[in-house]
Amino acid sequence: MRDVAASTVRRLSLYLQFLDECGRQGLGTVSSGALAERGGASPAQVRKDLSFFGSFGRRGVGYSVPLLAGRLREILGLARRYRVVLIGAGRVGAALAAYPGFRARGFDVVAIYDVDPARIGTSVDGLVVRSGASLEADLLAEAADIAVIATPAGAAQGVADRLVRAGVRGLLNFAPVTLAVGPGVTVSEVNMALELEALSYALHHAQP
Amino acid sequence: MRDVAASTVRRLSLYLQFLDECGRQGLGTVSSGALAERGGASPAQVRKDLSFFGSFGRRGVGYSVPLLAGRLREILGLARRYRVVLIGAGRVGAALAAYPGFRARGFDVVAIYDVDPARIGTSVDGLVVRSGASLEADLLAEAADIAVIATPAGAAQGVADRLVRAGVRGLLNFAPVTLAVGPGVTVSEVNMALELEALSYALHHAQP
DNA sequence: GAGTGTGAAATTGTTCACAGCG
DNA sequence: CGCTGTGAACAATTTCACACTC
View (cartoon, chains in turn green, cyan, brown, purple):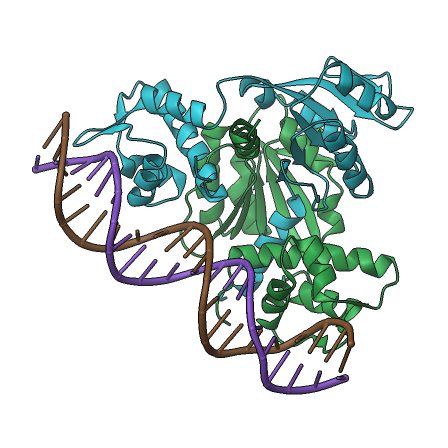
């Protein structure tokens, strides 16, 4: 399968969020126009995004909500569960450990790590904080699919390197640095400073 | 000034993050190549991004770290402080209230709101949680530049509408829905589900 | 008729290559 | 001589328009 633009994958996720909502409301079908409104796209773009993976709609009618939702889950790789390790048990790490959205979406947080002796051994949302030193050994015993990095900026790249070397292929980075990883590894960056500065830029350049 | 791509603004923020680091390390100048590595771009793109706003570099030498950092701050609208209100004092809201990065970057959280009577009146990181009902009156008395939305998905759009009507022009949305707002209002979306699903997609489609 | 599927056109964003300056 | 600044080539993405199907 040819590779798809990151922006397309983003929109597929948005379509799925909307479809789940439609499903809860009992709607049987949706049109590309309805999906477009929610996915921040044009109807044509919705159709193009979907047609890339096949023909799921019925002309004159639209898309079956449960059918398309199922197909999108499959495309997005959500038909399975993922093992997630959390690196950093500070403010951000603790908040993430308590976040119910992970489990709800198929991502199981199986361990949480820190290097601060004051935190190691304490319990965070039902998980005992482990020492960062045992990371490699633990991953060797039981592999993880994804690591969430919630360390200070200075430690993030080093941790990322260790994780990749230990076989983790997906990183979700909350540290305010851009991680460099080799091929075959995917990084999603959640950089709040960036989002704030995008707002700042927009407000600053808006006509008053 | 012509309008700049969102991706360009993103990169400008990354350049600034890197420049601040260089400044702390006492470096006097950086080349477009060094900036590129950090901003996830090519040297040519760095130069193009910057040249859009003027000529800040010296040929044969590079860019002065403090000079370029100052200019980027100005371009990004970071030469002032912003008043921020936080909507939702649940898990995410509380974590955000405690996040020191806001203040450090010029964003002052001046109020936090919730609709749950059990939370109203309690203190979150030095701020007393106010009733959502008083939002409009409060904003009339003292305007805010930016609102951070950390409500459940179902409440987010309604809150956004009220905020925009009350004059807020920048929204940072943590609720897992895409907000629709009129022109003149900017929204930054932090949608963790999207990031997770981007990882899921990448892992699912990686060649094993 | 309503709404999908899709090549072709338009637009947008990125890379190249080199002139020009310190 | 190294590195910036920039128009021109290139690539990717989005929009358009319309045939086609239910």
